[in-house]
Length: 76
Image (cartoon, rainbow, N blue to C red; front, side, top):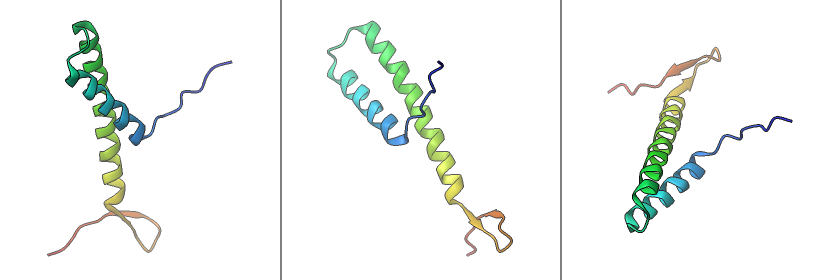
């Protein structure tokens, strides 16, 4: 039976990222592990950034009368 890959939430990824940063800042891990953790942190940062961008795009749209979506713009 094939395992389904569960997508982690933004909060879970951010928490993992914060934990990795704490470990790296401590300076108590070997260089090879630090490099691996750094790469993992960069991947998590990209995932978080992508999710934030998608959320921002979604928030910046408004529902039109016909049910379609339109980018929200403030007219000054």
